[in-house]
Image 1 (cartoon, one colour):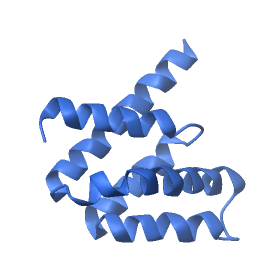
Image 2 (cartoon, one colour):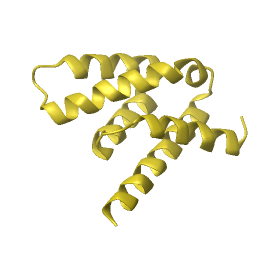
Image 3 (tube, helix red, strand yellow):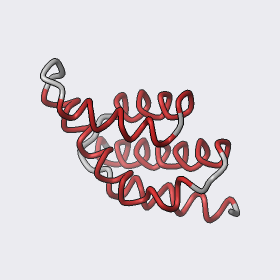
Length: 103
């Protein structure tokens, strides 16, 4: 996958990640980097249902689970390094969107 394709995929993912906190996205990405995509998806699924989590983070994990499930086919075939790059590009798009919202 070329860099342009990775950036485009990251932006598509970020475009659907509406209403999530950057903090929860970063935590989830760290988990995926350490444990892999499938475990990361399971983690988001468990967190969205947890009674111990506040409503804001719970909603973030619900959104992450739904969006990443949509892109699962494209993401699971990527090598770990490329997956981390795509998730990083999604993070950059989330940061850029938040910056334009604040201004």
